[in-house]
Length: 283
Length: 294
Image (cartoon, rainbow over all chains, first blue to last red; front, side, top):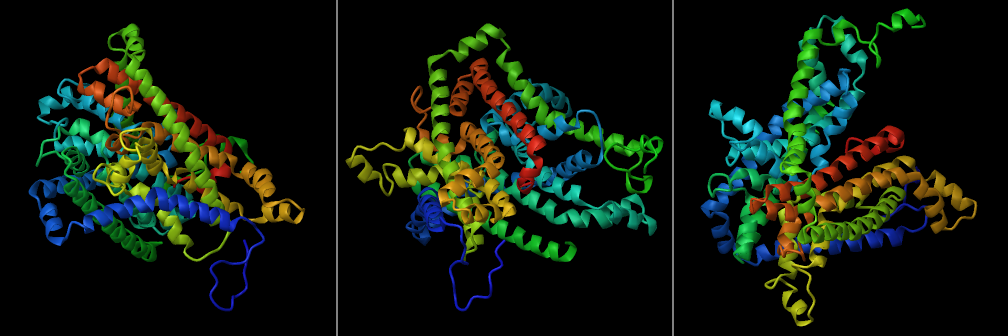
């Protein structure tokens, strides 16, 4: 690490003997601009070019509003489920020893590695009324495939590793001494977990939630097979974008995409603020 | 702690007194709940893929894989990954060099921008290229006048894949190279090595496992990407159909064996990825430490 002396005046970069700054930064910026920034600003430019009145009309189209509600609502529920089970999975993997733990640990990353279309058709086959799980749930009156519940199931699958992998390393770092100190002071096990351990894990859990949520909002491949895709019922916003594109209705597709981006970034900003707050409070 | 007899009664990993762990029944219950949850949500989908693929026997399985359209989908998927992974590899190395080796203004912002594609829906990642290169797009007329086909062709599929897999290599390398610091390179330079030599003989060997790790994840996503590619591909059978898109087409044609046969190849790829990833983490965990949990 270079410990640079206080510089007089403004300097773009600290001096260093390592060469290649101009080349690597230049190439990185050029590549980033060509692949990501120009295409994304094209989207913003196209939605701005619509004009406020047109944009508002497209944004408040009932089918669009409903699709956005479904996308954000199901992603929220799925992320909440993943916070519960993801934290439990992380806890069991970190704290308990059982045969096959390493394999189970590796399996948690399956949703990262399995292509979403494969997950989609597999989950649909499982939860269809004739499928292994669908058959079991049918007598209970629970329909998963081709309903909004199916969307939640797919998003729980997709989002699980985000929570486990953000919470797990933080859990591994917790000092045994903290718990022992709490125990010697007379805290019950339940008190130790809720008052001592969970507050320390809160920032990681919130990060995991936000990652799973952001991924769920945009998810397409795994959802479209199981959702049934009924407008106003189980049609997600990314699918509506695709439908509008297939109708060559570029303005509508652009408007939905712009709203999704804006909402996602606003959510991430809020979650970042909550996180900073919780870090200050508990970190 | 020297007494081996006492030690053998303790759990293998570390000692925990009763006050700082849950009671036996609670532990067993939580473990069972976890295993059932993971079994239902992760294992069953994996099993059903292979079960459905072989539902009509091994013969039908291989027959559906030898279909001409399936073969061309496999070839296209390999081609797209073979182009996009090296592109993002070069970018990842370059960005990590600039960000990890130097202190400059706006570094945090640049790092955030690199992660941007992860917070964009894959469908939107495809849409932005349609808006740029499509018939009604900003460059559409110009491309048409010059006879250049980007959308509904291989270049569009590659671009969309590069977009969604953009951060993978960079985000593995940046924390790793930051943790390693500049000492090794500075030593090499002081001994007379050129910048390229320092990179080739010092930096690259230092980060090779992290690099492989990032490439592995990048490749898995590149071969499996569905949403972004679906928007730009045009779904022309035998021409612009990647394996995940071919799965969708076969599935929608009620060709379950065909769809799951292609899906089983992708699931196999996922399993190989997981095994390699776990091996890398086990053997080179210390070297990858900076990147774990990201």
